[in-house]
Image (cartoon, rainbow, N blue to C red; front, side, top):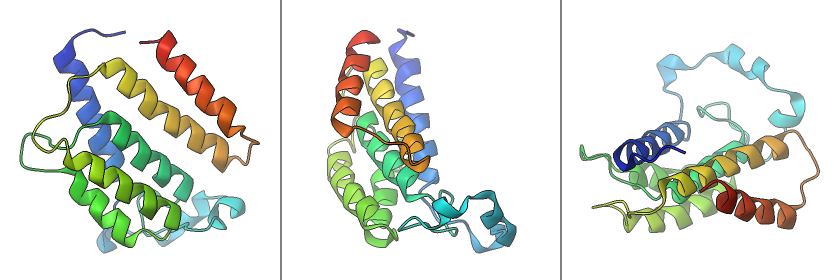
Length: 161
């Protein structure tokens, strides 16, 4: 794993910012009505699916919110804060599960407004990616043993720190 702390911290920030962008609505001038054809019927029928968002799938939006929380970084150093995006998500997302997760992560990110904690960057990034893999499995309607998945997450973090 990469050891340069500054590079890894920047990677955490870039990842968190990129995920946060996917939680936003698509601006009206950029909306494409044909975009809906990119999604399977099962996905379109998910409670909270919303084509007006960059990420219409609620499983992925939930994963992105949780991943942002795992990355434990809020400020980009230029006066922009990710918690403001999560505040909007907690108030407006069409999925109750995503709104609830965004509310929890929003409170956590407020702790990191001034400075991200000095933690093991590799661990935080691995934990964030786990959520995205989990969302893929949920979207594919694969049977997921949540307890085993969480245990594997712990193993993975220990193995690849």
